[in-house]
Length: 460
Ligand code: BGC
Image (tube, rainbow, N blue to C red):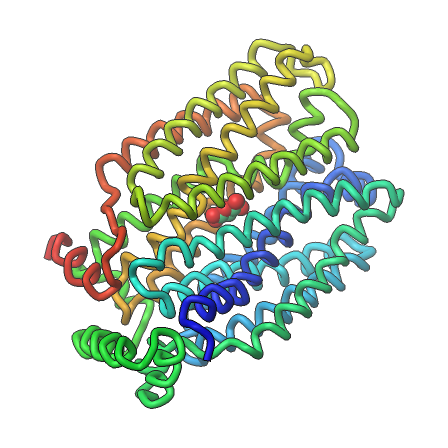
């Protein structure tokens, strides 16, 4: 048998292919926007709204995926849900890339959204459930790493495919079927989560998975700890169990951090990146090239976060990163404000400032709210309610993301980029205060220890 370490990283990476696919699926739209605007004639005020719908419908689908994920992964296991997401990503890629009507296009994207919503919750839960405490932050962040690699690859592939002419958007969407099939194959090598197996009373299977992950002696101890934490809680998981006084503190924190992750505009920036760069001047190919650069920065800084998260802890990353996000967003607002709002007329120096500030914003997000939120969500909830609680918070996260990306084109049309980014900047300041006062440090403690201490801080 291979060493536990190799096994764990390999396993986490295989599962994190779900993260790759969801990152790809979400941001591939940024290159598609300029084409579908023409193809489906999305012009004027009504057109802005329809464009917002075409882009954000993935997020609305993701909300349904979030809700279903908790229930399905408790009932059928984490692995079955991950398989389902692979199929959804494949179907979405094939349907969206061949769509000839706006309705079919939207339905295909909603289908991908279901996969996004289910994968974004199930992959980190699975990884947290197989990881030992001292490596959990880094291993769960692998999922975020794969999300940002997916995002980056989509920016690159859009950049490479844009030369194919009017139909290039179909290729941009269609290529995703390839990694989706690979994910399905990889999942056949992944064992079921030992914590889920134990919860279902399948202790001998759980023990054999734990033994292969941690070695025989550690496996017994982990098994006993999980059993104890499962025994302490009720046996059926329902969404309503999440809304009890026992979970109040961790739930409010989860809802808060999920809100600030999205209301500060990350997905408005990612899904409309070439459109934003176009507002600052330059052609489509230049804008797609700049988007690819932003994608690379996102990947590099996520790697930095993975190195630091189990050493420095979650709080320092959050506080430093969100401060940088606030400064960058206010700078973007100022750069647009100081220049006329008509597309293409922003002076070069301001256009470069916008690019620089967007890169800074993405870098700061990538060492803070991006990975740290998902790591903490997988940590703060008790074993028994983890999947359901993450469903609720993930649903909320998708709701905020879908709303932000739905209204972004209309905001740009009505208020212009300066006011839009000022709003995100102020939200980042509010987020910083929230995190400074409420974020617990979860570094280096077992899930079971966290369960004992964090729940004790809840009132009631
Ligand atoms: C967020 C996504 C976002 C991504 C960007 C994730 O943590 O949940 O909404 O698109 O980071 O890197």
